[in-house]
Image 1: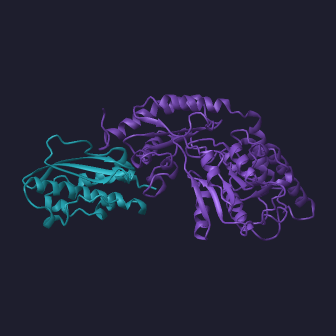
Image 2 (image 1 turned 90 degrees about the horizontal axis):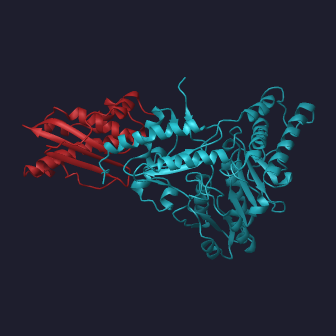
Image 3 (image 1 turned 135 degrees about the horizontal axis):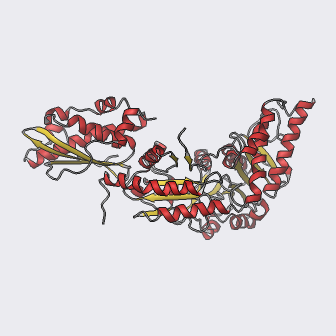
Length: 385
Length: 138
């Protein structure tokens, strides 16, 4: 079989070996429903509670502040929509950023149609929000600040602790989508001052289909999914026991290795090498950056074409070009950074994890310049000057 | 998502580049939308003797340019004007629905080049082609 050079770990990571082995028993003999009284049910319940403690410890929370959900998207929907519901007497104003993941962005667009007023803070060329703009945006009817901890497309790490401080001073709830952060950089909910925080299992080496919402004790967030009263009445639906176990195992596995120095070394090597290509640029913050995200734009060419030629070399990456998303507009994140449409179409993201090797990076550095040159040679908008 | 034929034309596009002695050049699309096709033709005795293209865009944009150029080569101007986006897409064993606009662009690129040819001959292309193909729509 042809070797695959997988550089799309921010889309999803291959499940880690320990996570896979930890979850297996709960797909076979440990089939019990955690709500049942007999032993196979009790064992499943215990596995969930062990996992809850692991996740809590990992992010500096208490176990009773951790709720398992079906995905990061669900956690984001729950946090945002239930906060709006809970505060309907206080107001309907939400503050967010222009570079949120669709799981937040689309939820906010939906709420706008329901009568909410949303302020999307602009970002600078590095994808950073202005704390002064945030302070100015807060109104007496502001009920929620939801700003991501780290961006999925360009890797920018946002100043969550400062945002949390401002939220607290103004008595506004603060939710952060930390899906790209947990398991990659140090995350502590107390340090951030988050009232709610979203994370997802498959972005850190767990199985797909499990998310977490941290809800600060005392917040009393109303449930979003109603039913049999699982997760202490806050999130009904029979728990994905195997998935939850895999998430905890993956977290336990990766945490001792943070900061992920080798991952950021590979990232820097890739960035240094690819910026040698003429008229290429790094997107996102060059300093406050996730260890695994190397994101670029290449002038004169289009992202999907790059992906197809990379795929022919066995390299898997991603792009925020319109053609890769099936719309006419390139990614809202790249446009928010101030990149013109025609340049944003030429975006390319490599997301690196510990499974990658220095040889993988060398291989990309060997292949990509030729691909860019080939596409530029057939591009009517490219001229060497 | 793409047929083998699309991938084959994308990987090994035919007739890429500029024709130095072109007497008909058409460009459609715009970079803002992410697709630009530029077609060069050498027309002699009403026949498209040679043709080439340059394209900025996705895999389907490159493949449809390549196929449309191949289909137009050797045809009379009138025959080339009848190459439809549907014919281009069918020749490529189909396109995903969200990529059909690429085949439309390929059809328009050929018409734009022929429109340019008529203009150079001092003939008003609008009665023949229907418009001068200079619209900027995505």
